[in-house]
Amino acid sequence: MNSYSKKAIEHFKNPKNFGKMKNPDGVGRVGNIICGDEMRLYIKIKKDVITDIKFQTYGCLAAIASSSAITEMVKGKTIKQALNLNRQKIVDNLGGLPAVKIHCSVLAVDALLEAIYDYLSKNKLPVPTDLIKKHKQIEKEKKSIEKRYKSWTDLEKKLSH
Image (tube, rainbow, N blue to C red; front, side):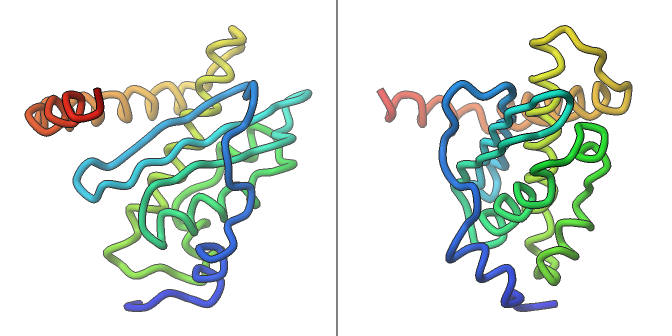
């Protein structure tokens, strides 16, 4: 697929659940320094159900559409149901994405997983083994990217102060 579906374009033009959330129960922050996309996902949880979800994304059409779609796909779902979401389900929900933009759907899933991990950890609730492994993988990737692009990140810090 080389172009965007009508549904992906609609999510981009009119994103659902966009914005910052006050007092979230969990926050997931992920990014890809190579393409420049950055996502923050905020969740509220009540009795094991994601009752509210919002996102802030700096990125391309696919990144914003994936963020918007994932919020609609998990709102009202249990944590367990949300943990079963994967990039293919997002891509399918959007009616496909160009092959070079699939990584955007991965970022959206990672942001959700990080938000759930944050919620469970902060509340001293059991964290599923698969989620612990994924969190460690995400953290390792972040450190690897930060190390590889240290000169860029140092310059960015200097410029932002």
